[in-house]
Structure formats: C-alpha cells, structure tokens
Length: 295
Ligand SMILES: Nc1ncnc2c1ncn2[C@@H]1O[C@H](COP(=O)(O)OP(=O)(O)O)[C@@H](O)[C@H]1O
Ligand SMILES: [Mg+2]
Image (tube, rainbow, N blue to C red; front, side):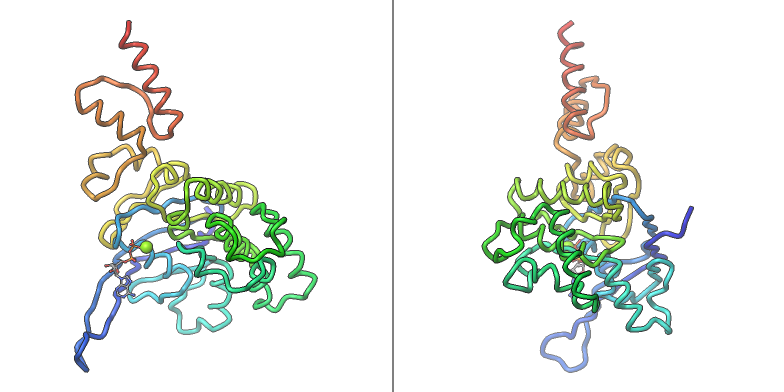
C-alpha cells in the first residue's frame, strides 16, 4: 500500500493551563494518548466519540493548530515534530489538510462571498487568473456559483458552511477535516453539507474526515473510528463498528436509529435477521421480519 497521507504513531496531547490566582502552578489536562492511525488517500472516515473525548484535539493535531506532546504525526510522509520542520513545511501542511469548523460565522472573513473564497489562494501568492479560476471552480463544486457577489452574513447556515468549504477547496487540499461542521445546521443545511462531503470524496478525490455525532452520517462513511476518553478504541467499517451496540452504549454513543430499534426488538426476544446499518437496510429488515411474523 502507498504511504498514508496522514499517519499518527503513539500520538498524544496534554493541555497545560496556568492555575488561576497562582504564579507557578500548572494544570495538566491529558486529552489524547497513544493514538495510532493511518489515513489513506481517497478514504472517507467518520470519527465518533462523546463530548470531551478528544476528537477536536486530534483534528487540531492533524493540521498543526496543535503540536504533539507525545508521539508522531506524519503528513504526506513528513514528520511534523522533526527539528528541521520549517515554516514552509507548516504552510504546506495547512494547505494539504484543510479544516471546516462547527460555527460557519467564525470562518468567514470577507464581506463578499467570492472575496472570502479567494482569501486562501491569495495567501498562497497565486497569480490573479489562477485565483479567479479556483474561486469559480470551488463555488461550482458547492453549488454556490450564483452567490459569488452576495454578502455571506445574509446566507443560511448551510450556505455559509458551503462557502467555508469552497474557501478550503480553493486551496486544493488533499484532506478536509470537518469538525462537527453540521452540528449547528438545520436538517436541510445538514443534508446539503453531507452531500458536498460525499461529492468531494467521490468526484474530487479528496480524503474526508468527518467528526460527527450524527450516526446516520457516520454510517455512510467507508471507515469509522471511535475515540473514548482520549484513546482510539474502535477502527473498522461502519458495519463492524455499529455491530456492537452494547459497547457503543457503554461509551455514551448510539447506533443509527434503525439499528437501535432492531437491537431493542432483538433484546426483547424477537428473532430478526438482516442488516440495519442504513435506513434502507433497516426498513428492508423490518419488512421481511413482519412478513415472516404474519405467516
Ligand atoms: N484549550 C484547552 N485547554 C485545556 N483543556 C482543553 C482545551 N481544549 C480541550 N480541552 C480538554 O481536552 C479534552 C478533549 O477535548 P476535545 O478534544 O475538545 O474533545 P471533543 O472534541 O471530543 O469534544 C477535554 O477534557 C477538554 O476539556
Ligand atoms: Mg470537539
């Protein structure tokens, strides 16, 4: 297999905070430890974990907003903790691994959509024509080409998030990490953003890491990684990860609704056979069961 675009080896991070009202005491907050994870080009990965489990810390370590306090992160083969790691290398990592955050309002910098999308490529120092082309292409990808001259603050949450995504796409990243980017959106906005994530992955070949607490979103990923109390505890296909519902419950997570319903019925003694990962599978499984129940 080729070199992973992201590789974490025994990765850990501890926050250090100054204790209030003292000059010297420091509080250490371990957030992540011993994480081993390789992400390959073209993958579509969901990351799950209850609040405070370390998901955002991991995301920030992957685009070097934070620097590891233990272990290693390699981006496209480059060790980010290497003493020869330069400012240029940092710039390169930030370009290769883009990040979309939860609150779209905090990510938009300009008063006109196309200027906002141009912000990243301008910082790359690209020629004007190239910037213009990238902005047009990126707005097309997120289906916001008709809003190029609009004011971002007047758009819906989902539209703002799509502009933020366009700003990242315009940098031509290898990976985009979505850190609960659908959490503040209404169902329509959420669906739009999920559709864009899938399009970026399937059509643009971008590696997608979606940190989410919507199980239906996670069920659509090729691979699901579960973090609990700073440790990576599960890493497998969506089907594998959602097969142990009791384990998910113990760590404060749920499976997608259909799987939960079928799990509850099975616990009550109903012998239901079949898959229940996606909504379609659950419906099919329940219908087949009802048919056999009648006869
Ligand atoms: N800036 C910070 N300073 C100190 N502790 C932090 C900071 N950010 C997060 N933490 C702590 O690190 C742990 C992991 O947090 P985080 O990575 O934000 O989890 P998640 O994204 O899964 O909710 C939590 O205990 C949280 O309180
Ligand atoms: Mg978080």
